[in-house]
Image 1 (cartoon, rainbow, N blue to C red):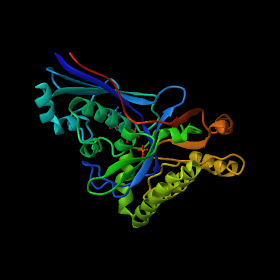
Image 2 (cartoon, helix red, strand yellow; image 1 turned 180 degrees about the vertical axis):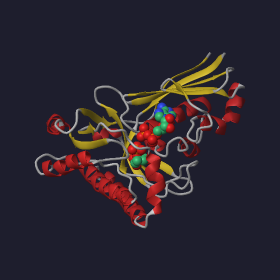
Image 3 (cartoon, rainbow, N blue to C red; image 1 turned 180 degrees about the horizontal axis):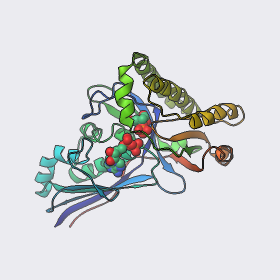
Image 4 (cartoon, helix red, strand yellow; image 1 turned 135 degrees about the vertical axis):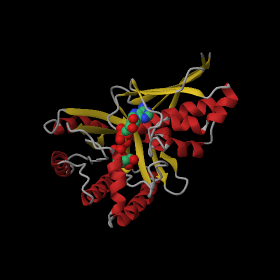
Amino acid sequence: MVLWKVQSVAHPTIGIVLLGGLMDQYERLPYHSSAGIAYTLTDSESVARTTLTVGTEKSSVNINGVEIDQQDSRSPMKLIHKYSSSFLEKYRSDRVSIESVNENILSGSSDAGAAALGKCIDASIGVDPVSLELEMRKVSESAGRSYHGGLTITYAGPRPFTRKILDESEFENIRIISAVFPHKRKPSDDIHTNQPRHEYYRSRMQNAERAVRELEMLSSRSDIKGIFELAMRDTEDYHYMNSLVDVQIVTPEMRTLMDRINEWRSEIWMTYIVTGGNSVFIPTMRENASEVTGLISGFTEEIHELRVAGGARLISSGFS
Ligand code: ADP
Ligand code: 3S4
């Protein structure tokens, strides 16, 4: 029997000051601060759509039609266990099923999935946002970016938290062209476990903290181009760090495109960001989006146009 049902959506994210290195695999606490934006495709919505049902049947987790082992280290069921006494108090049941479907997501699916679930939990029992973020990060360390949307900074510390520093509306004139390369991405945990082992990591942490402070300043002036220039410099530092620990994310094909972007930049404003996946993200002005798409069409067959998106949203909720 169904007692309560709620559905929420959240957008996936792209790093601006990229995160590398987690103190432990369970809590997924970061060693340094980082920043990111939520995104969606421009021609269809990119979201994780998550439905939470409280009922009398047994608990389950299903992602994209596949049943997930609830003992999995990043299982979304962790959030339900944390708040089980609140579910029992309000619904007299903590039997919860979670169903999530990723729609039009290029990368950052776990961020969106964790944030959409967080929104469902808040709508069900009402939770303190700082504690909710600590729980969501057990599924994805970048969930806070997706939960708040726009441009956010996640501050490191024993209780990391995310703050929205610019609304998505400030990015209306920006488009991000995504050039997707046809190889499989590596799990982000390869980056998180390997970076801290190298002596350069101390510099990387300092560079990231400095970049976050600069980002706060650029945001206070709404210097949108400056924000993406900073992101490009951070991408270079991040992947220099990865190269030192033999984690190759930027393939020779991706590097060739990035080199060409550096040439084109003198004619048309554009930058690049590479996170942990197989895309080169190319921020540019909205009026130049088609021209940039034309320029990169010889480099890969899969190209998408993205824009900056908002935070997690409640779609429906109700008692049965
Ligand atoms: P991504 O960049 O797509 O987030 P990661 O390697 O960081 O890639 O995360 C992949 C993990 O996210 C997998 O464990 C997968 O089961 C989980 N995941 C994917 N989609 C969802 C979702 N909608 N809800 C919860 N977890 C999800
Ligand atoms: C590699 O925790 P993603 C990275 O900060 C890890 O966006 C995030 O992103 C870098 O490619 C980042 O796994 O989304």
